[in-house]
Image 1 (cartoon, one colour):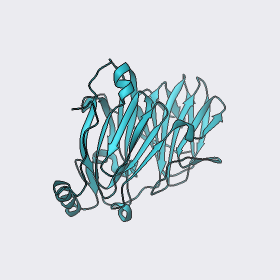
Image 2 (cartoon, helix red, strand yellow):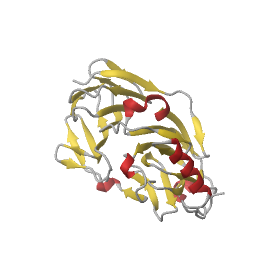
Image 3 (cartoon, helix red, strand yellow):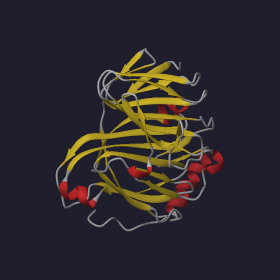
Image 4 (cartoon, rainbow, N blue to C red):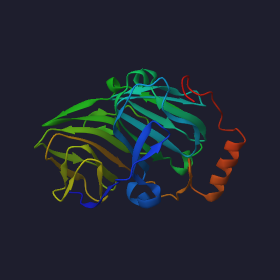
Length: 291
């Protein structure tokens, strides 16, 4: 059984633009080795937004060298980028954007959600790209809930966003081996996850509580980081629980980041800044109804 190395949480929320009240659960600046290939996790919400005619969100900004993955639990998010990718995702949907060689993108609340308001909850992850793929062409994957296979468990369900669980395969295309599972457990449920030996393993609880590997209880907005050795993770839900499992093969490559760019060397960061300033990552008109 994989042992829990430590737990991690953040009780210091901040705003990204005016549409995303987030808590940064981890970043590559603190526990990069233990979370690779995942660079960052922002947990937005749960929050309640009132109706508005003005589109809340964050305006155009660049990225290079990694991917952003947005999982919507409540609400609606609209994305557009300078490579031509974009779409609207809502509860149960996932957006997987590969910045690669570089692009400019914009994220706002969807038009319908802005008009009606309501509950909002999402997770955004930064997923590192292997060195050989840092300059790959940008790509956008808009994954609808209906495309994500759901596995029925004894006492819950598991949706396979990326990777595999049993015979179920997730729709997300990845550049390195990754398992990303959206899990719901009923109170008292016991679940044994089988994961590849040597892979990173992270368990994040959005709501409820769960005991991990018979040693650590996680509550909402808390994450367990497990050792890479071993293939089993034991979960026991103390109440109805919503959690996200992240696993993957560590890249074990240098990480140099500055703002919206994550590369392998300082020289590559300077080049990314020059390329953005020169307009090589593209530009775009703002979404209608935004500033």
